[in-house]
Structure formats: C-alpha cells, structure tokens
Length: 114
Length: 114
Image 1 (spheres, rainbow over the protein chains, first blue to last red):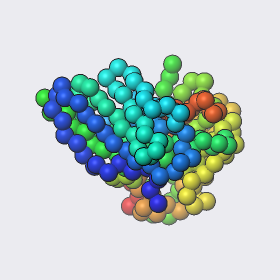
Image 2: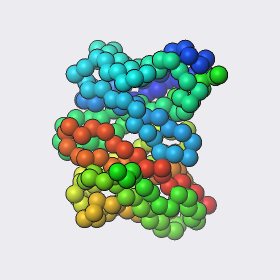
Image 3: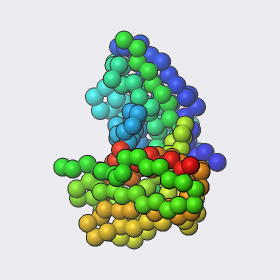
C-alpha cells in the first residue's frame, strides 16, 4: 500500500521555464511534507518542506504548495536550470509519538534541457 | 559543521553472509534513521535510533538490527544476507523531537549480494 505517490516517473523541461513536480498521499495523519533532490551516487539532499497547517512555502526558486483536501502537493521550480536535473523525492512524516519516520514516493526524474 | 558520513561506500557480499554498515551523524544530531533504497524505488524506512534506543521500526525482518553509540554514530547489521538485500542503504540524522522534522542524509552504502 503506497501512501505517497509520485505518478510521473520523469519530466523534461526547457531551461528558464517552470518545472512542476506532483505528489499525492493517502494518509491524513501526515503532518509534514518534504522534498528531496538526489543526484546519482549521492544521498538525498533536503530542498524544502511544508507543515500540514500551511498551504504554501517559498524558498528562492522553489515553492511547495499543499492542498490538504485533495491530499496533493506540488513543487514548483522557477526558473529551471540545467543543474536542477536530478531525481526528486516527495516525503511525508507522520505526526504523533516519538517516531518520526519518513515515507517516500518513488521519485520523479527531472531533466532540464539547455 | 560536519555532515552525515557513511562507510563503506560500496560492498560486495555473498548470500548467507553478514554485513555491518556504519554512519556518523551530523554534529549535534541525536537521532539516526536507516533506509533501504532498491533500484527504481524511494527509500524505505528500516528503523530509527534516538539516544541509543530503537525508536520505531519499519517492515523489515529481525535479521536487520542496529546500534547507536553514545556519540550518536550508528551501525546497521544485516544477517543471513539474501539477494534481495542488494540496495543502497541510507543513513539520515536529525535533531529529534516534534519540531525537528528535517532528516539529513549521508551518501549511502551500495550493497551487492551475489
């Protein structure tokens, strides 16, 4: 049972345009959502996060939007740069208790073409 | 500030053998989580250690075990290796607690079981 889903395995975007990566979740107990970027042969690098009590968080070129009623979040990258080419993982944290494990989607490979 | 480090970077074992993977957490972090990432999948939570105690476990059999030391470094041990254990093993550290939602990952150890 996949609680965090990234339905697009890959996305190709032209440099300078907007990249939109999508993520859906099923567990309403998730209280925090994070996006990680991963290059080959490296561990995931934290990008940006959002609390379930907010609907938007912005950090430079990266903005995350959360729609709780639809159980959907998206990461917007504007403008996209070739260095953004990587696998992007959506992750969710379940609140409560002391065990803050992350549940990950399968990832979306973003390719930004010069 | 030193980031999360893992050793070794690569490892080849044969079925039935045992393996120990090591992780040094980021300075000041008291919580370590271990994840397994199979090819084409997102990271899957194995278990988490907080102040030397196991603090939650994912759907992995008991032959996956761990330790956390007083300096908050950690080990992941896998006994009776199976072919399906071939994967990238990621360690992530965090400050722990409800307000510390971000986990920071090391580069991973790639394990191949023949």
